[in-house]
Image (cartoon, rainbow over all chains, first blue to last red; front, side):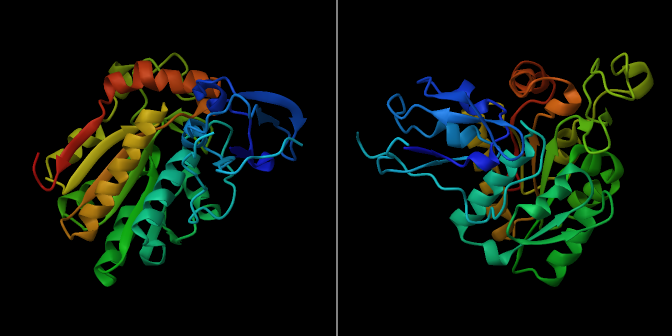
Length: 70
Length: 247
């Protein structure tokens, strides 16, 4: 599952463009740097890892375990 | 759901980077860190930085790092490699650093076949100083010092560093890009081969990576990646230019 490190995100949108499943989007949450962070729809995510590959800011990691929705 | 391949931030990345949103440096650093982790050489790697956005690396990459005067990274790296031949020595430079101010050092490091690896991040502008024209700025590209676009009559043609260095028969030389996921993975394989060539004592290796600078290109991050894929790789073809001393 995609785990997002919100404080690293700079809202560049590379992951959103790369995701073929449309699982990522910009949320209304603003992090400490002043950027709107990305959020993930875990139901759409297939764990392909392309978001990790294109992210320049070390925001995204892919874990195997299920992440409980907050 | 079936098990997925887990992906962690490499352990050689120890802090968030401080580049602009959409900057390619963060990606290239992650690729270098992944390769260093995979080869398990994080305690045997010495990086040399010079000046420019690339020197912000010292806040992110968890290897021994040294900063040299502007453009002189390859000269300093060559000295370190001669003193500590068992270490992997790399330089991490931008195009303004390696292809302009440090072009003499870059050329003579290749000419002497120093057993170092140069990683050159080519974004076609001087990023840190505010987006001035660099030797690799494309014809017609607007910068703060070419406000009507680069004019070849005045500034000449963009410098193709790989073509210049190819004649020195390097052990490994390649140009990659990071404008989409397949090219990112390919760029990583180039970095890995360059490090392997150095570890095998084959000689000089160099990887140039085409990277976006959304801030100074005055584009959104997505537009800048598209520009690389549509425009920049037309002038700077990708691929391996030298492998194992052959061309």
